[in-house]
Amino acid sequence: MIDSDDKKSEPTATTDAQQVEISPPAATEEVPVEIPCDPSAAATPEAEATADNETAADAEFGLPAESEAEPQATDDAVASTSTVEAEEPIVAAETAEKPANLRWDLYFLLLLVGISLLRVGYLYIVPLDLGPDESYYWDWSRRLDLGYYSKPPMIAWVNALSTMLLGVSAQAVRMPAVLFGALGLVGMYLCGRRLFNAEVAFWGVAAWLATPGTAALGLIMATDVLLVCCWSLALYTLWRAIETPRAKPHWWLLTLLLVGLGSLSKQMMMLFPLLMIIYLLISGEDRRHLKQRWPWLLWGGSLLFLLPPLWWNFRHDWITFKHTAHHIELSGTTLLDHLKTFGEFVGGQMGLLTPLTWLLLLLLLLSLLPLLFKQSKQVRFLFVFGAVGLLGFSGFSFKQSINPNWPATYYPAGLLLLAAWGRGQVNAGFIDRLRKWFIPALKFGMVLTLLAYLLPFAMELSFIPLGKKDPTRRIKGWSELGQQVGTTLQEQPRPEQTFVLSPLRKYPAGVAFYTPGHPITYKWPGNPPKVSSQYELWPGPTDKLGWDALILHNADSPLPPALIASFETIVPLGEKRIPIGAAGERRYSLWRGENLLS
Image (cartoon, rainbow, N blue to C red):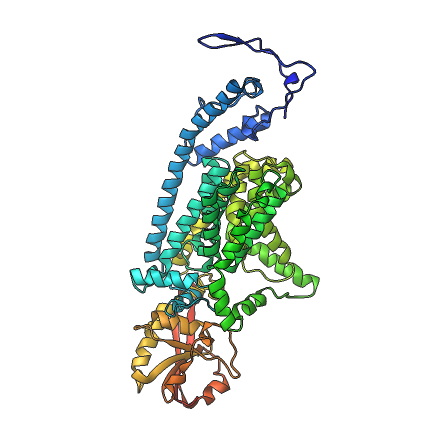
């Protein structure tokens, strides 16, 4: 805010057609004028330094600097008491901003196409098999349902469609990860562009892509791929719905649809409407939306999407709720236990996002917290949909272990906020002196992400003895295992009456996908039976009494006595070894269970 009394009067303003006398306001009358919250427009040394940093950053990445001829809004234009003249600079600035936005739109399009093509090509050359979870979710797609043991049904539905169109292959299973990853980037970019400008949106997406976690998210078919996509798109559509006082039903309905689809992908999406209400409560400009029906229709309508999995859970003793509750059980009672789980959380997030980017984001969020109500509504919006979840998980990590991927959905909003700060659109007090580290952090992230893409190839070198420390260990050796099991099945006395069985979930999933013919496989439920996966909810081999079973288990692990008692005879078939590069070997043992008794 500035007072017009503080401005020097300008007796005349000359145009080509006429001179118009403009008198300053009376000394006793103050005319407050809102200044657009754009730090780059202020002619302070700090702002000039920021502008220099932005130009240097563009040059470092080979991007042309902003044109010096681009119009800037001046104090004289802002302070003008003439309505027409006050509007003219705004219109001129908007007109001048369009070419700049189009230029950054082009950069984003090139980035989106480039990263998508890279990921598609990578699927066909990377020496990694489907992991046990990916094979497990694919196995769900062979028995479509309204819900499953640990997750809503969307990932099974997507897998079914993908393999129906592309055939059963690792590339077909993972192709949706590339597609939904790209759609999530579009949602993130559109959100940043609408909140600030195309430049901020571009750098926000670039910061997101320059993280090892995003590299994995765009290639591994997991529920987080679908969740982050729906969340990012919903951020954009929700902002379009609330950015003006006037109701926009089509944007509200689109947001409802995205929240509903996200809820069918992963339970975390159910927090989106809650965060929306929190934002509307703390944002004075948008609180009026709470008096309208649309926010409440969005919340209630999105819950309707959960009716199918709720009905499925009702018929299966609410097993998904029991499984989810297990994830939030407290672990540890001593201070050392709490510090250990917090340290694991911090280490996991640094690995997911890179240390520099994560630390900058954390410092920014902590700095904005006491200044939140003095910030623009754009900042408050991104803060609620980013910081609330991230800070919440940080606090919760003192009580229990947090999987590194759980907070992933909050990073798109957080990184857009970081990009806006890094490009001088947001001020956060003392931390602004660290703004110059935004681009170095992004470049460091690019290096680590490139190494993450190269890591699977390096881990093929068997002379690097990493063993269990090889991060790719869990997703190697499964295709060879499937071929070995297929060959062993054909060597059995009754191959046409032999099924695959294991006490562990990973073997039925991997064998089902990689064994020729994709046989139906089974998991031993224990005695008494215990439900610990989807396999126990499906019918067991009760229709195969008298059949033989090819039983798989970890090497050096004995079979459960109750499993042995279920067959007339157990015949050891020896141990198998599969070389898996730096991780050493995948070892497993085989038995033939003859004549299933019960």
